[in-house]
Image (cartoon, rainbow, N blue to C red):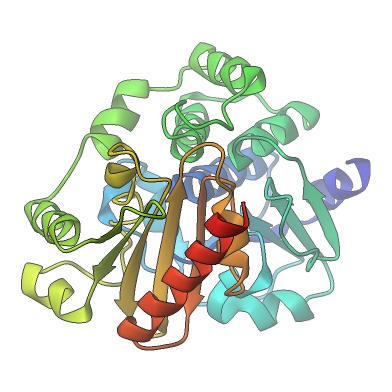
Length: 316
């Protein structure tokens, strides 16, 4: 802790990286860390992400500060990014830099940075909150709101089984610091667009269900993104499989057809570890929410995913 805190203090120019296909935790944590470092008087702290930032995150004004053009920085920090491949086009830049830190909560990730600080908390936002405390930085309303957003995202608004007493304790402290929970819920969790609702409905209607083993596979073909007017570069469907978990299925996954392969978002009930299934394809994540990319056609990916799920469930 002392060594990487010293690195954070000494660097005047810092580049922060969120993982591709960003979720609430990586966005909220990165924005909060930027604000924390800027409060220390840094010359420049810039944020980067391989993927386009979805408009649903724009209720946090600083999402519009994400850059695409990379410059020279004394320190590079990845936030909530389990492995180097999730950095996308910034992977080689990060791996070749002399001073790098990985701040994360995924215990299954890779130690690809020069210094890796990983705590198995329910959200990376709690790691960032802990850093603010160690740096003796007073958390303001905007920072508290960003961190609260991150915690809500990775705990399913405190419903996932990774939610523990530390989660609630940190959330309570963030509320005391001024976190605007109505802004978080209204701006993100309760907000939908008509194209997204229509495509979600199509995915649910066309799901392939295996009642014998207990899983559901949903697909989002490239033509559906065009048909419903949904931007394929923005992941708005990751949690759609949860609908089938509420219907009694053990595991549900959605396969999204994109330019660089089939992006898979896996979800499961408490006792089933989908990170093991995602790991079969070089991915990973949490026990009940993981992801991976399969380099195959949508039809082939569907077969491979079904085989992996069945092997895992039968093995249990």
